[in-house]
Each structure stands twice: as C-alpha cells, then as structure tokens.
Image (cartoon, rainbow over the protein chains, first blue to last red):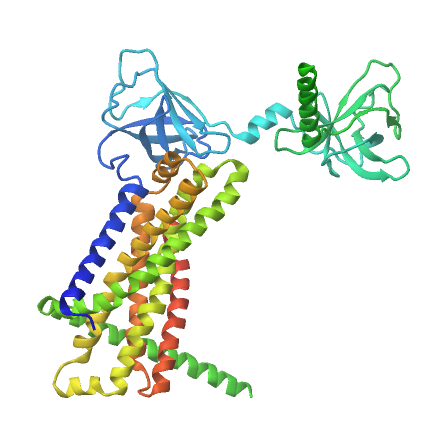
Amino acid sequence: MASRRSIEIGVGIFVVLGLAALFMLAMRVSNLSSVGGGGGYELTARFKDIGGLKVRSPVRMGGVLIGRVKRIAYDSRRYEAVVTLTIEDRYRNIPRDSHANINTSGLLGEQYLGIVPGKSRDYLKPGERILRTRSAVVLEQMLGKLLRLEGSVPAAEGYELVARFDNIGSLANGAPVKMGGVRIGQVTAIEYDRERFEAIVRMRIDKRYNNIPVDTSAKIFSANLLGNQYISLEPGGDEKVLKPGDRIRLTQSALVLEVLIGQMLLNKTQEGAGGKK
Amino acid sequence: MIADRLQALGSLVIDSLRRFGQATLFLMRALGGFTDMLRKPHLLVDQLYSVGVLSLAIILMSGLSVGMVLGLQMYNTLVDFGTEDSLGPAVALSLVRELGPVLTALLFAGRAGSALTAEIGLMKATEQLAVLEMMAVDPLRRVIAPRLLAGILSMPLLAAMFSAIAILGSYLVAVQMLGVDEGAFWSQMQAKVDLYEDVYNGIIKSVVFGIVVTWIAVFEGYDATPTTEGVSRATTRTVVYSAFAVLLLDFMLTALMFGD
C-alpha cells in the first residue's frame, strides 16, 4: 500500500483532473462561452409555416448569430405559428420594417430565422412583433410547383410506346416519362436485346397524350444531381403521330458521369497536346 | 410438470424480489453512514484512491483509443459526402451523451466494482466484518459507506475525463492527421453541443451509473457466500449485473432525456 502522503496526492490529482475535464466539456465542447442564457429581449413573429424551426434554433442577421428561438406556439384561431425570439441586448436597433424569413443553412443544414433589416429609423421595442415574415419553403411544395405533378398515371388507361437506347443509366421500372416537364406516363418494362446490344424500354403513355409526333426524340435525364432518372420526350414537327406499339426512333442514352468526365479530360489532353505542337 | 416449472419461476421471482429488498435496506443503512465521513475524511480519501485513482489509467487509455477510432471511422464515412466538418459535433455528442458515461461505467464495473466485491467478500470470508461487529463498529458505516460514496463521487469525474480525453483523441486523429479544419472542428462542436441538454444529462447519467454499479458491487461482496468459490461467483455477478443494469438504465435514461 502506498504511503499516506502519496495516496492523498493521488486523490488530489484525480479530483483536479476530473474537474478540469468537466470544465473542458463545459467551456470548450459545449456552447456555454458563446451565448449567455440570461440576457436579451424578446420579439415575436407570426408565420404560416415554420418548417423545421425548433426551440433554440439560431436567429441570424446578416449571417451573424444575434439570438435564439425561445418559444413556438400555434394560434389555432388565426392558423398561424407564433415564434418568440430572444435577441441579445447588444442588438437593440432592429428597424421596425425588417423582414423575418425562415431559411436553411446549406442544402441539408438546419433551419434558422433570418432577419433582413429594413430602412426605418424606428426600432423594434422589446415584446413587439415583426410584421413582415416569409414562411419556410417546404421542399415538397416547391418541387410540386416546379414539376406540376399530377399524381401517378393509372397504368390501365393508356397506350404503349417502345424506345431503344445504347445505355439506360440507372433508369428503373416505374420511372416517369415526361414531356415539357409534365409527367405523361411511366416506364413499364426494360429488356436487353442480346443481338443488337441495346436496351429496349417499354413505356405506357396516358391516353390523353395521343398526339405525339413520329419524329419525337426520347432522352434519359436526371431529376437533379442526386435524383432519379426519367425519360424526357421532346416533340418533333411531323404531322403524323405515334400509334400504340410504335417505336420512338430518335433516342439519346443516359449520360454516365464517368464517361462524360472522361471525354472532357480526353479533350483537354488533346488540346494540350495540340498546343505543344 | 407444468406446476414444477411454474414453481421454479415463482421461486425465482420471489428470490429476486427478496434480494432486491435486502439490497435496498442495505443501501439505506449504508447511506446513513455518509455523515461519518465528515468526521473521518481519511476513510473516504483511502477509498477514492483505490476506486478512482487506480482506475485512471484504464479509463484514460480506453478514452483515448475510443476517441481516435471514432474520429477515424467517422472521417471515412463523412468525407464521402464532403461533410467532415461535422465530425466534431458527431464525436462530441456521441461521447458526452452515450459513450462516455456507458463505457466508463462498464470499465468501472470491471476495474473497481470487481475489486470492491472481492475485497468485501474476502473480509467476510476471513470474518473481519464479524470482528468489527464484535468491537461494536457497524461494518456498514465503517466499511461499506466510504466505498459507496467513493464510487458515486468517482464515476462522474472518470466519465468526464473519458469524454474529454476521447474528444482530444479524435482531435488528434481528425485535425492533426487527417486534415479536418481545426476551426470547424471546435466551432461546429460548440454550436451543436448544449451545456444543459447534453453535458448535464451526461453527468446525471454517470452519477446514476456510479450509484448503481457501486451499489451492486458492495452488496454482492457483503452478500457473498463466505468461501473462495462464493467470492469468485459474487465477483462475476457484480460485473454481469452491472453491465446489464448500465445498458438497461442507459436506454431508459436516454428515452427520458433525449426522447422528446
């Protein structure tokens, strides 16, 4: 057994180390040092839709953290969300005609309340309401507006078209067929022609769209950088229209990212080689 | 046949309840001995040394390696999405909320809990506890209470050290070796980790685990059959029961604290 003195020194070191670790967790790891809990004054704002805003979400002006969301309530008579903010006392001079918007930091980041200052010389006093607000943009609504989705097309009502592609990328059964961005049908079957080394894609088009010209071209596109692939039909100018079971002759295969980049690099090196000569 | 099974089940339940009741009465009487520590602090200091200081090495080593591994593995996943900046908060949150208290409690049960059980069990086997009683000294106040308090005080300190050194370990790997931005590492961490929500709840967890693990350890020792085999069984039970209790309680506490 160690001597009395070394035991006591050991315990002393132990306690000091433990407290130092707690201090580090409080000051260095968590947010104690950045925003004090107590100080600040309150403002309110009303929104139709707050999206993913939460209590303690940041409030930013010009990107700088000036406070946090303190409380979120729902006014069931006016069908609005009432958000109470705590703003640090340093930032007393928020113009009365400022806008409060709900923004997202980055593509996938958390939502925050952004205040865009107005031009008024009259400043908001504690407890007052920011009148001009813009609600959160809900991604699904935005996409809905963008794509004018009309729900899925019933498979039974419609006619079939066929197209052949060198490469269909990651096109899958059930993928949408669009014309001018509007969904007009879906892919029903994908086969591989072993003799001609081509992919055969069968699609069912809603019967409302029975006037697709015969010189229409079919291209495989991606919905966005990360999204699913779909077939886009670009109508031609011919007066004859495609009949059920017909084949779309003009096709453009899926762009495979690696191939595309490969081509670009190849062109670059060729240009470089040409420059040297 | 069925009646036999049912009887076995019934006696198991009644036995467990009786043991739990004994353990609770035992805890209450030991808690009564906490006031003695004010008059004889050296009793507590000795136990802090054997429970806390002697556990330091294993806690710090494990913390460092857990932190380094976390940093390395999270980096490998996050770098694919270009989000290695959120490595700091991911490591800190998982450590402060879960891994720090839980792993420390498991290591603590293995290092200090088993030693406590073996020590008290041997005191019982060699009739030292009986001798204390003969001298009109209550072994619960003299032997059990200081060990219990030392365990309860040591656990949160050890858990905090575990988390702190693990975060430093992930800092070493992620920032110094793999090249995560240092400013992003700390500032994202400070933005995401909340003192009350995360750090305080982590400390509460470690205090609860400290109480439970030390309680199991000292009770198993005190309750051990006073033979060589009995002490060895009690030691095993301490580690197994502690591990079960810690993991189960961790789930319940997590659901209560972070379950919204």
